[in-house]
Image 1 (cartoon, rainbow, N blue to C red):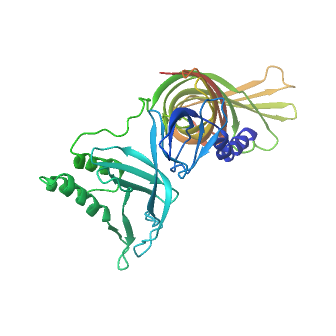
Image 2 (cartoon, rainbow, N blue to C red):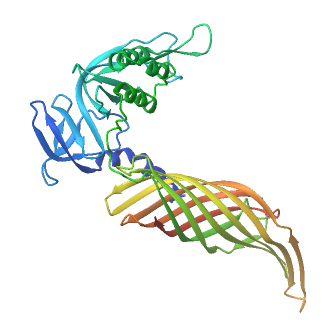
Length: 424
């Protein structure tokens, strides 16, 4: 359990580690007077739009911090582009759990960074995300004015528990379609009036307004996932679930057997590769053998419970690279194992011997038919990835009870695993 508590404590500290880690990528900033400064930008897991960036002219140089008031533009080469702008920001919530029963028109004006999703011939699409929501903005490149938020205002109907939507962004996009596609605006408008407020759908409309097939801001070709496979050792300690009968003692044997691992590794942001979703299929076997000794006067009774557990284990996990270098990573993570187990070679043997009656040895044995079952257990993971390919992985599953395993005995299994995986 100490290992499990240490893992939980490490997850609690994860935000502090994340803030301390650096990940400088090549890029540049453009100052307010138009000067371009090449260097390196600390690229983090930005789940919200950054309100400042850390910049170095060289990797050995001192860190400079830039806010939206300080620069007009910055780019992390081949990854993301932002521009600074003073814009109106709606404050109304859009989550169905928090929306009000009236339209929330609250807003503020501020100088912020806007992420550029696409630079178009006529119109550009941008976004801004904070703790409240994600907002999309359009910039009319011909007029050169400040980007305008595409307004979306959901609210609860007072007369029924349904969600209503005031889609102001429909009218905004229709105006742009009429301006830049005057001869066939109706073909664009037909798509606008069924539009959802999402990046992919709005981006398709922007393409139509621009009357071209402009791609979103180009990003480096970073793989969104990779597959891996490996082999490991499963060391399992199996105990009776609950206490043995009064006056008796259990003696157990630990199981040490190999396992096969197949998995998929999907980073939430392939360009940083820090927070990862993994799913593994693990094929493993555990040998269970428990002897129960009952010594009474000169008689000794040994009840032996034994069976083989063969499992296919599906394991969704979240892992976080606490150290995230290009050629070396250290991660911690956790998840759950959904175990589909077959119980075979199940056997119950009762052997009675006497210290006073020479040669007395009574043996009764019962073979139990094969059976199966599904059970669940939490898992904690740790490991190292070396050279982007070699993954040294360690796992721990706390004692988890299985009621009437193999139809003969309730057991609790604690597992420690170590293995080597190769990422393709």
